[in-house]
Each structure stands twice: as C-alpha cells, then as structure tokens.
Image 1 (cartoon, rainbow, N blue to C red):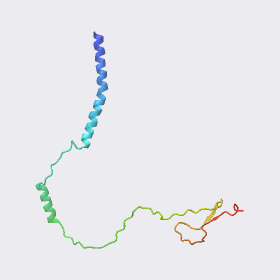
Image 2 (image 1 turned 90 degrees about the vertical axis):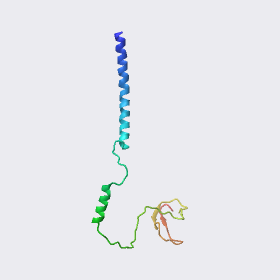
Image 3 (image 1 turned 120 degrees about the horizontal axis):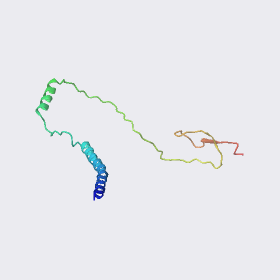
Length: 125
C-alpha cells in the first residue's frame, strides 16, 4: 500500500508541475495586459481645483502683451506625384536591326519627317 501511495503522490506532483507553468504564464500575461491598460495607475477625476485657478490667475497677471499683425506669404508644399501622357506612341521598324543612335528624348518637340533613331548600317545591306 505504501508503494501505491507513493505512486499516487508522484502522479499528483507531476500533474501539479505540468499545470503550474501554464497557469503562472497566464497570470503573468494577464498582469502585463492590466498594467499596459493602466489598471495600476492612480486616476484623478476630471475637475478644476483651486490650485489650477490660482495658477491661471498668476499667469494672466504676469503675461506680457503682444501686437499681432497680418501678413500674406506664399506657402509651397511638396507633394509626391507622377505624370502620365494622354497619348502614347509605339515606334517600330520594318527591318530587324540594332539601334545605332537615339536622336530625340522624351519631352522633345518633333515634326513630321524628323529622324528619331538611326539603325546600324552594316546589317541593312
């Protein structure tokens, strides 16, 4: 019977050890959540006290007077943006050749008949 009681006591102690860690972790977690929520902080009811009124009165007595003038000024505010063209043109060649030089860039003004790109001449023969 002594061995049976010892086995039961060992099973109970193992069960307590298995349950103790999760229970302590849960208690710790709940305590941290309560602390972050301000549960342990002293709270003051919203009201005006006599000291606040006296501080405001002292401030008004010692305040300086200032003259305010109106002035117009331009304000510039930088904004990140992108611009897309209304029209897009795809330029292609009827011949298979490498581009030798690009004569114009984006934003350049071109007229009909202007050379936009030139192709390598050695592949054209």
